[in-house]
Length: 293
Ligand code: NAP
Image 1 (cartoon, helix red, strand yellow):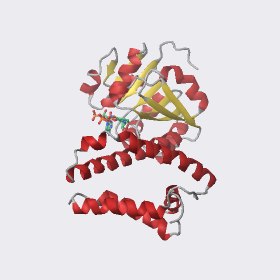
Image 2 (spheres, rainbow, N blue to C red; image 1 turned 180 degrees about the vertical axis):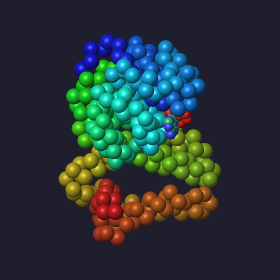
Image 3 (cartoon, rainbow, N blue to C red; image 1 turned 135 degrees about the vertical axis):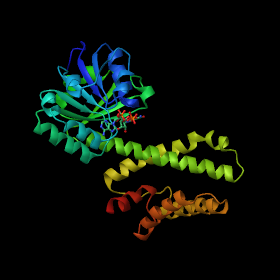
């Protein structure tokens, strides 16, 4: 692991996230070069960072290069620019651009072909939370490379978590957590819309958030064990009964003339499990149906 002494870092991309990352590294005492496609944004990062108009000059002499651009296609375009691969050889590239596991695998192939050490990373935080205890970054790739840079990387998130050697593992975990986040957010926003449409102040619903969060938490714990054992039998509540409850939600939405798309989609997924003969199993049995598509 690095000793915690100042590291020469380049941060490629001065968007909302890249700027926050660069300032966090600089605030921790590191020597930070920044580069952005639109140079004025790199100059606006501030916080003691040094802006470069030329990408190769920005990474030159930097042991650690962090990338945060919109997507992997944008990153691939940058990396294929004349002279960039040569300038990165022998350095560590930390990919903090969000993507899929397949993107990460492509990134690793590129890095191996050009003699670059590569960590694929996923940050779970808004820029305003970078460097606070609310930020988590997941890393995948070589454990030795991660350990070498851990002390430096903790400037952006003390909670820097090594997931696995498999290069796609950080992106997989990020997608899994984000799906749970976006799915449950859509669910509680639809729930609030149902309340409003029925004349119940949504703030009453939100004041009971511990009820639905508690149910989700208990179900996730039960699901973990059932998925591990591949056994979804139980004596709490059958899928048949759950489906009847979802039918009430669809009916309420239609009667109140609000969008019924979300509960309808839920109903279709759960009903598919019934048609596969899982009606007497517990709710997590839907996992079996989902694995088959
Ligand atoms: P952003 O503010 O829109 O910044 C996008 C950055 O990508 C800009 O620096 C932009 O350069 C650069 N870019 C886009 N296309 C490019 C290209 N073809 N070549 C070179 N540079 C290009 O986005 P952001 O919020 O910083 O997000 C950056 C990454 O962080 C994304 O992968 C995002 O998923 C991830 N992330 C963001 C958050 C968040 O809350 N913001 C949270 C977690 C993860 P220009 O300035 O020249 O357009």
